[in-house]
Length: 546
Image (cartoon, one colour):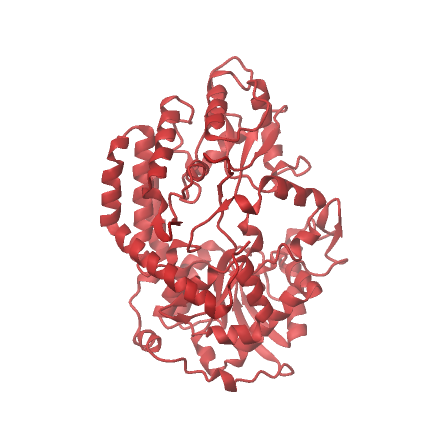
C-alpha cells in the first residue's frame, strides 16, 4: 500500500467521524438556536436531599468500566445520585453512539472531544443551552481553574453567541511535547550533548546515518522516521523550531493566520527536503507512519517524537520504551530531547494546551434543569475539596493507592495488577466522571519528586506553542473544509519533502490552499478570535493560561 493510499484511507476514516456533523439540522434544532433558553434558571431549585437519577456517557477509553465502581458509588453517596453510566470504546463512540442519539437514547450528561461534535449535537437538537451565568453561579471555583488553565475551551461549547455545555480542562497539557534520543548512539558518534538546534539535530542525524552508531560495521541505520499518521505530529518539532505550527491557527501581529502557509513553513520544508536528499530520513517513512516508533525500538533510527513522560524511560516497567529498546539492543540508552531552540535561542514545542473537551446536557433536561445544577455543584465540590478530588480521580487513599515522595502515587494490591478490578471496581481512569485535571494544585503534589523534576527540566510551560483558538475546529466552516484541507496539505508537504513536487511550488500551494477553503476558515478564525475576547470578559478569564 502506497503512502497516498494510506492517506486516502485516513480520509475515509475522517469522513465517518464527520458524518453526524453534516446531518442537516432538524426543525427543532434550528428553531431553538433562534430563541431564548426555555429554562427560567433564576427559578430552578435543586434539593440536595432528593435522590436523583442521572444517565452519564463519559469520556471514551474505559474498556473495562462497569456500573457500580467504587468511584461511582462514592459520588452517588456524597451527592445523592443514582448514576447509570454508559462506557464506550472508540469504535462504539463513532458507530454506536450516533445511532443511540438518533434513536432518542440521549443521556443526561455526555462527553464530546471536539467542537464539531458539539455543533452536530446542537444542530440535531440533542443538547440544551447552558448560559455562562448558570455555570458561574454554581461552579465558580471550577470556572476559575478553567480560566487559568484552559480558557480556550469556552470556544468549544460556544456557538452563535450562546453556550452549550460545561468546558473541561487539563492543566498538565499546557506543557510542550518532547522527543527522545538514543544516548548511546550520540556517544558512539562523538556527540556529547543532546542536540538543541536544527543545525545540531542535522549533524546528529547525519552521523547516525554515516558513522555506524550501532557499531555493527554496516550502514543500516537512519537518523529519523517522521510520524505523519496524525497532523499534530507531522514534523512538528521542526516547524516549531522555525516558530510556526503548520497545521494550526497562530497569531501574527494581532491577526490569526494558518501556520502552514507562512514563510517559516517553507523554511521548514526546505530543511526537511535537504535531510531527505541526504538520506537522513528513513525513505520508507511515508509508508511506515503508524509504525514510526518501531524503527526506533528496533535500532533502525536514533531519534523519535513524541516521548514526553518519565515512565517511557523506566527500565523496571516491562512495557516502557526503554525496556523495548534494550530488548533489541542491550546497551541501548535513552535521553529526553527538550524542544529545539529557535533562531533567538528560545526552545519552542507544540502543545495541545489545557483546553480539553465539553460535557453536554441532553435537551430533555430543559424539563429537569435541577439535574444540571446538581452536576455543576458536584464539579464545584470536587474542584474545591482535595480529598474528594483524589477520590474522584483515584479512589480511596490507603485502600486503592498510597503515596510516597520517591514513587509518587502507586496502586496497592490487588489493584496494581488485576486490570479487571482496576476497571470494574476502581475505574482508575476516573476522568469519566470528573474530566478535568487540576495538576499544579493537586496532581503534582502526588507525583514523585523525580517526576516533578523531570517535567520541570524537560517540558517547561514557557516553551509551549499552541493553536491560538485551542482547536481549529471551532470555526463555523470547519466541518466543511478543515479535514480535507489538512489531508491535502499533508500530501503536498510529503511530496515536497521526498522530491515529488518542487519547493518552488510553495506559493502555488498557498493559492490553492486559500481556494480550497483556507481563506474562508481564516476569515472565520479572525472573527472567532474577536469573539473570544468578549467571551473571556463574560466569564472572567482575564489572565493568560499557564
